[in-house]
Image (tube, rainbow, N blue to C red; front, side, top):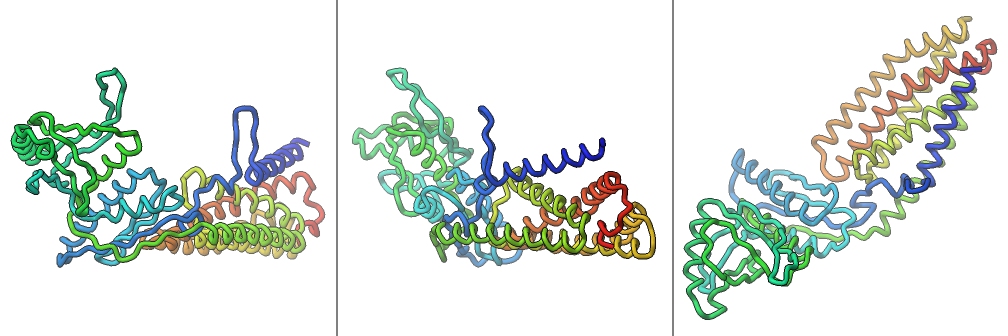
Length: 419
């Protein structure tokens, strides 16, 4: 009786979790959204923008590698300033960097910011370069109290030692001017003026503040451009594309529908072929799916179309593991062993084959994730999650549920176990 209640409780929890994943639930102040809506979608599904940049340099070997890593880090900071979740920034080949931004609200703004690849310069009214972006140590939004007592957003800058000296000399020189236009130090990026602050006082400590009619968004944008404006090498924009989400979302819906139909057919096949063990495998496969979905939500994994392919492949691996185990159990039953003994021997003898197939696929997934870019990396990460969940459900959960079922049924009727 105790085991029956425990089994019913497990099935009820799995059923409720599945309902929540499909439909979501709201209890008082607590709300859990649909899994379909909670998982972050990749560029091919959610839409967005991708940019391919190429370094304009003759550097080779370690020097080129160092330049590319520095450039990637700076572009990453520039992109993070846009507030984009989990951007994909990767080095392709030796001289190219690919930037993928999924689900952003204003793709054109992202293109404008990523496309500004020239070095940042501070230029006075006589077109003399005062400092460059490499001298900017920090650039961030702060709040400064106005004469009326209101807190207004400003952009606070801090320069390195060289920049402090040069900026002090420049501000001393222009602060003495009487013409307002001669008191301006222009901030120029990609040959475009992004700000024209007027020097009010001599700045000797390397800490400047740009004030004006800023709101939070405009101040943050300017701070980001200044902070990430200096690249160690000039980058040429080879390709830029805005991808609409319509086709991707349609493909996503179809993939989800196809996956649901495939799982249902697998359930029917397993029950017909293996009876009670097949029913247990359906429960285990549902648990597997829930583990993968909630893991993706928890880890913030972006789901792409290749990622869906990786999940489907790992589902196949999970079913294959169950088939191997159940066939072993049937062999043991046919030679006259008891159900309990057959389950123990079946799992023991099939374990080597299950581990070999899953570990080799896991290694392939790790390689794809480590060396791949874009969609290939997405395929690799979902494959890894799927394989790990598959091994947990096939080796541990299925065995536990089977033994629980044997204790409930008594294990006398071997036909219920596919023999």
